[in-house]
Image 1 (cartoon, rainbow, N blue to C red):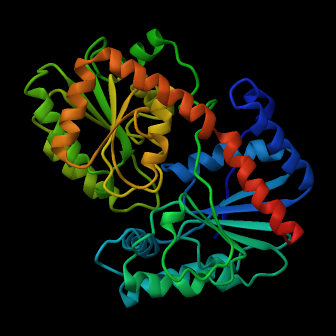
Image 2: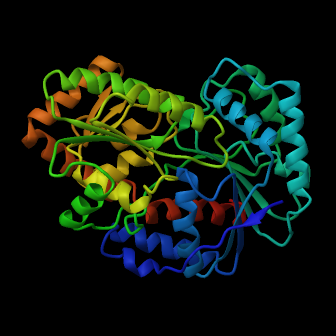
Length: 413
């Protein structure tokens, strides 16, 4: 059931001119200490989400550093992914927990996957709740197990937490984006806070000539040159795409020719995505200047790159958020961001850096208008955001902190 994901080859040397020198040096030192280690990453999907993007970039670089690294995704049927989506929402505070049938579907699928988990790994890193039960079902063996939680679990649904908590007790360490995300009475003694990061050399973030970016957007039906704001995210209730449309309509009362692009990714492990997509499409169907795209209708990484570069403002109006990689992606391109004051977003946009944090539709519209009308302020915020991302949220820093954790587990520190 566990399926191995094939990735490309890449060299860490390409990042020397982008990331701070001290980070690159410490990363190589930790990798040298772990040279030859076998590492397995397990998550729920190979495409359509931030975790899969991180692993697609991380695994080739870890291999380049001399480590033996595999990436596998957990297999499951429709019942399993409906259960894991309910669990995902409940851990972020949704009122509905898991039914008995959903709990049974989760455990059945996890046990089937655990039976196909090969031994021989020194470290097994489990991402998010979908494969979290693998340790309980498989047994620890000689490996060090780490649970990497990418979502905000600070106020989980009590019923969902009672289901998940016993499955986590055997992990050697757990990693959260922020200390505030650690749930109460967490059963793992070793807890680290490690924020995610973006890959500046991925197709989504690599430098893109403005003329080429314009041609790409023109080809898919966005008028360029033209005024444009964009939200890039999963079609997910927590990203509040309907709130973005409501804020955009307020802005259009003053800027009548403004276009809005809602660019969403659909993923195997997110069966609710199509429901939210239908809601968004219905809300936008009579609005000629609202464009709705998905990764399944021809809009991939390069198109997202073009949207983030050519938009005057990028919006990320999240209500709950683990980190929100699209914020750092947009700031890396010098584009200011209007974002919800949620989860890990303020880490990327401290006061006066990168853009504006908001908590309502009205605040979102006001912030968008200010940046659209004051291009000098917009450019200043965008450039300060790019430098903040360079210092704190590029991939080598993430790899350095993760390898530092593994090295201390290996040494018993």
